[in-house]
Length: 232
Ligand SMILES: [Zn+2]
Image 1 (cartoon, rainbow, N blue to C red):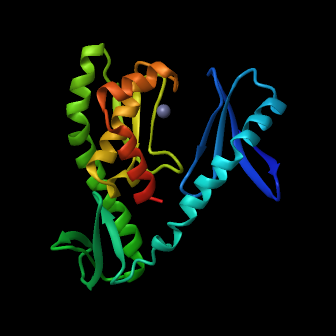
Image 2 (image 1 turned 60 degrees about the horizontal axis):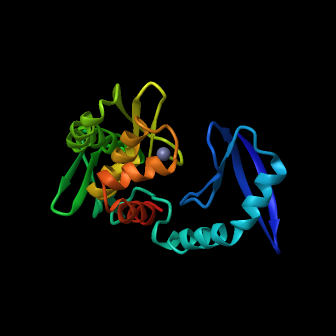
């Protein structure tokens, strides 16, 4: 992966460029406003830059769209009163003094018990991971069963924190889901599961891939947008 940039009017667009076995150029703008470009192995850099420049208005629009959500999600300080998401719902954080470290979801509150307030962040992160490890396989199960008709099945389901990706599917069929998804509504998690399951059949984002994704989950676009909005 390499860092590239183009000029567009008075603006500059910086993007991460990655070459892949694929037929066309793919551009993604992430909620942190970074831009990733995936290009076919044999694409010339001038051609790539030209294409990115053509899509520049769209890229800038996406970036400002994500920027408009920024005030809603300031960096978390992990202090009482802050709101935190779990499965698409807001919970208010409450920190209690306690000998025993513990995190509990109770009547609209995310309760953190600890003798050391500076550990609140780590405790909440660990709690999210644990919840993800219990919820994701449950949510994925029905979809994994549905995809058996295509003769595919993930070799394993791994749940971990990832930067900039909701999920991925390795060539060996291992599906990886980002713990962060536990903050989103169930439909968003299902969308990522379906997306990765489709990759067991099509290892790219070809038309056939999207046809399959739409066939299995008609309203995936709605969930994708929701995901990008909720976790911006
Ligand atoms: Zn994909």
